[in-house]
Image (cartoon, rainbow, N blue to C red; front, side, top):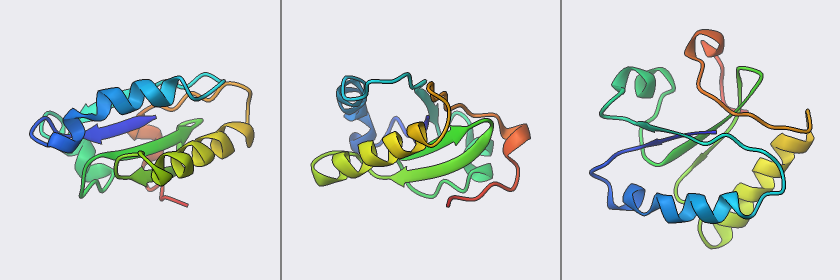
Length: 109
């Protein structure tokens, strides 16, 4: 999982609490990566990040889904459902990572 965020965004500053909650809500392995859009603007452009936070789900080097916004309230349940769907549609360990070389041209489903 890659989360594009920005240090200047108050919404993004509150993400650490949300991510810790999400980590405790899944019963399978997920690798969480945070990318600051100001520190790596090339990655943000490459993945067409136009707002933050933007969560990208990867499997096997391919973008399989994305979720824009903070997963709280009803959005939290939708986020977890999409994460579970991504996980259970493949192997028993879901590792989501940023690998721009393998993902060129990938689009969100």
